[in-house]
Structures are given as structure tokens and as C-alpha cells.
Length: 82
View 1 (cartoon, rainbow, N blue to C red):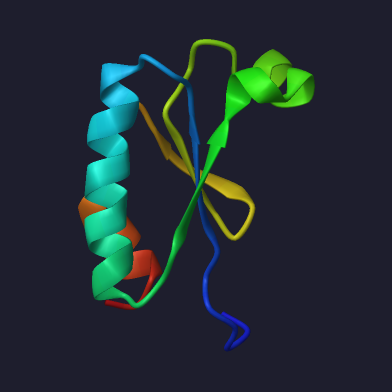
View 2: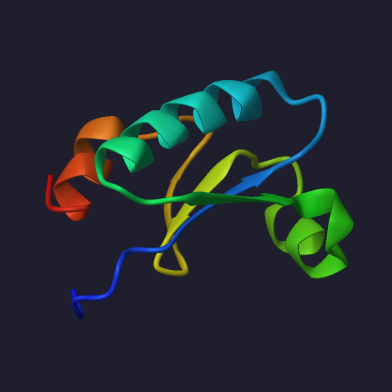
């Protein structure tokens, strides 16, 4: 890691139950690490919608796909150095 805070993004969509669960989980873990989560609606961006389609939620860590459908909490904690 470069010493800069890790950037967490959650690709989501309205009406997605798994997205709600993932957001709650990600907010909790990010809060413990002192990080913020940026939620991005894939339906608002044609490029993201084309790339991810119905495969949401997706967690991006530092711009790279980390997990999808569920938050891999143990792996995320490890990758955040927790």
C-alpha cells in the first residue's frame, strides 16, 4: 500500500436487497478502519451497467474488484491491514 487511505466503492442499484446488506456490512468494516464508502449506482452509468450488469453489489478496493454479491469480510479486513 502507498500510505494513502484505501478507497472503497460499492457498486449498487436501487431496490437490490443484497446491495443493502453489503452496504451495511461495508460501512461497518470501513468505519472500523476509519474509511468512507462511496456508493455508486451502476444504472446511472452506462459503462458500469454494461460491465457489471446484474452482478451487483460489487466491492472495489483501490479501483479493483474485491468481492461481489457479498462482502468478503475476513479478506477485506486483511487487505485493509486490520
